[in-house]
Image (tube, rainbow, N blue to C red):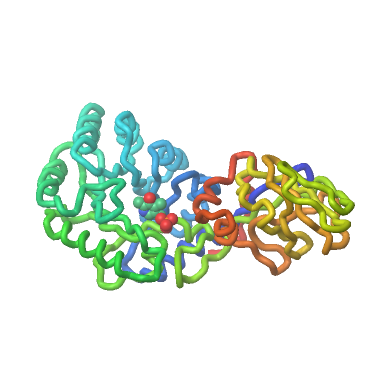
Amino acid sequence: MSTERGTRAWIEVQAAAVRRNLRRVGEALGEGHVLIPMVKADGYGLGLERVVRALEPAEPWGYGVATVEEGRRIRALGIESPVLVVSPLPPGSYAPAVEEELTVSLSDFTGLRRLEEEAGALGMRASFHVEVDTGMGRAGFDWRESPQWGPVVAAAHDRQLRWTGCFTHLHSADLSDPSSMRVQWDRFQDALRALQLPGEDFLIHVPNSAGALRGTGTFPFRGARPGIFLYGGSAGEGLPAPEPVASLRARVVFLKDAPPGTTLGYGATYASLGWERWATLAVGYGDGLPRALGNRGSVLLKGKRVPVVGRVSMDLTVVNISSLDGVEVGDVATLLGEEGGERITVDEVAELAGTISYEILTGLTSRLPRVWLDDGGD
Ligand SMILES: *Cc1c(COP(=O)(O)O)cnc(C)c1O
């Protein structure tokens, strides 16, 4: 499982694992639910087109993106199922959204008017979902004001537009305490009660990965929008672990026997304690490896954990391999993922870096080739 010896560092992605993780979300929700896998930010950094191709056999209801350009890339694959842009659009993006037949999420009257105008100008009927803000605050019509905006939105359905869905977004479903989720669900339900929803082909969708894996409770949504779990990130406290998806590998490009007191890296933040053997890996923060792993992180080499020493630099990272035998230039180290029964999860790296798995995955830069593997499984 390696790429050409000329490749310095790369990401291996297991397509079937993405698919299986989606199916597990579907199983947690049970019969009668539909899935809108979120493939925004280039499929959480792994490659939007490949993620969509990996998921197509699972026949999701549609896909969720953050931008019109991401939606266009899905359409370019020949996908005809709904593509929902979940973020509010900048003013110039409504026309291309309509042309690509994307479903726009509306958060205010300004967006509603723009969408109606652009659809009218193009002579097309555009679809939209309404986002209801129940506590996220960053987008959506306020749940308390549904009696005011509800009739205006409903009236638009009869003209140039088709109102095909309604959703809200949970802010703390990753925490095991369900109280904030209940509050948001109650608010959403209050809003829904005040609305005249168009009848058929209307989708109400609520949970992200965490909310979906915590189960449906008594709340009447049909759709879920899972993201991080599909890509191998933990969805939250007390939830089952996903199947790992991405591995970051890098080659050893230099070996050094360091006499006692040899300094290492920018700032010389490390010096060898006695005689040490160091291996320089061809990966750094320019690839998205968090700089915070300097003197803190670890790496798998020859199936064993070895510590990162000194600061991570843009292109190179050094590990202390004094405990290992037989390491050679050209050997492959694993910075994220599995090797020889050991595993470094994206959540472990995120924790060390003081961030979340989402930021680690979406921060992997384009310098790393994405090498997609598919075991053909469901
Ligand atoms: C990103 C996003 C999701 C997916 O969330 P995960 O925590 O990655 O499962 C769902 N809904 C909206 C609106 C989002 O922006």
